[in-house]
Image (cartoon, rainbow, N blue to C red):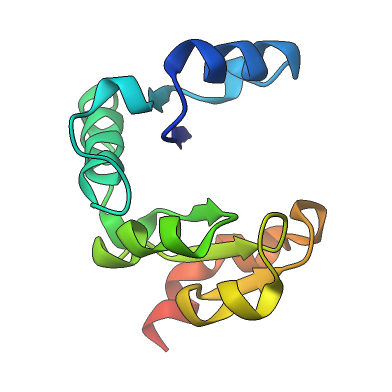
Length: 125
């Protein structure tokens, strides 16, 4: 898994460490790692490239990724790369996220793992 954010790397690492989540994320693409940030797709593509470099047999494609996003503007780069998006109505209301996401939830805890595992089938149907 990867974190792609406009926040500084030190901030992201601190939050992940304090939440005991750092071990779950192989890749962090932070605001200080890129010259062009969201809403350009470059950070998303960089994360995908790094994941593939770290896992040579994986050959992960954009459509096989899942972006979890809480802002409508930040959903744009994922859509430009053909990465499916789940909108989480944390920062913005559900109705603003829904048009740019493949599906939306009110809370991250509402994310259905069965649906995540079958996202490629939902996108192509």
